[in-house]
Every structure is written in structure tokens, then in C-alpha cells.
Length: 206
Image (cartoon, rainbow, N blue to C red; front, side, top):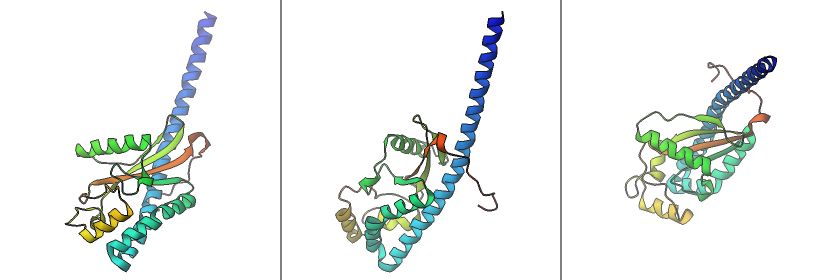
């Protein structure tokens, strides 16, 4: 009887510990979802601001040249600034250096399915099977992006498309409509067990 009691006690303690561990993981994922939202918001503002300046300076052709030369270095600098690996990827790539890994491919497919069902696309953080904390958020096409990502011969001028094909011979990133799923933000915060709970701003501060 004592052995059974001891076994039940040990099992109860083990389950309690697992529950507490799961609670901690859940809190971490929730917190880093907010952190990811903040980082992608600021990263988008930085990238789009630079792109708008390029468009104003030299039109879509100059903007394409800017993206070809500066988009990845700018993303890398943002990664260093926020101390997280930042990537933009898609199922319809322009720059093949943004090719999705297996988990990104899965998430992009999932976002596509959700979009087809006309359900809201939301950001998502998770702890992966290899215990890394990763974050994903959909990217929808903005109206100002049509000149480089819309329909060729309509929103994308033939002269612009010629430059796109010169810079990106395997381009698949045209034919989009405003509001359509263009791609996805992908953030890798690193090993989950090495992360601490971030200090989050209040809703008023956001």
C-alpha cells in the first residue's frame, strides 16, 4: 500500500511539474508573439520608408534596383538591431535567397489555406520540435506595391518587368492583388530555454 501511495505521489508531483513547465512555455510564446508583432511592425516601417524614398527618387525601376542591392543588407541590420534573425519569405519568390525552410514552407501553406477559407490571418509564435522559439506573421500586398508586384502589362509596366527579369530571372512575384497574401515574416529568437520573459510595453505605449 505504501508503495502504491508513493507511486501516486510521485506521479502527482511529476504531472504538476509538467503542468507548470507548460504554463511557462505558454507564457513565453504569448510574450514573444507580442515582441514579434512589435519587431515586424518596426521592420516594415523601416523597409517601406526606404522603399518609398527610392520610388519617389527614381520610380519603380529605381526601387527594384534598391531592393536588389539593399533589401537583404537592411534586413540583416534590423536583425542585429533587434538581436533576432529576421527573414521575409514567400511561396512566390522574387529573391531566391529568401527561399523558405521546411517550417516556413508549412506555415506559408497553412496561411494560404486559411486565406482560401476567408478566415483572419494572424501572427503566431511557437516553440519548435528542436526547442527554438520562432515567430511568423502574414504579409499582405499593399496598394503601393502593385507597380512591382501587380499584373504585368497592367500595374507592372513592361519596361519595369524587363528590369525585374534582368535582376531576378526566376521571378514569381507578380500577379498579386491588393490585400492578397504576399508572403510572411519569419523570426527566429533562438533556443527557448535561453530566453527570458521580455519587458513588454503597455497597450498605451504600443
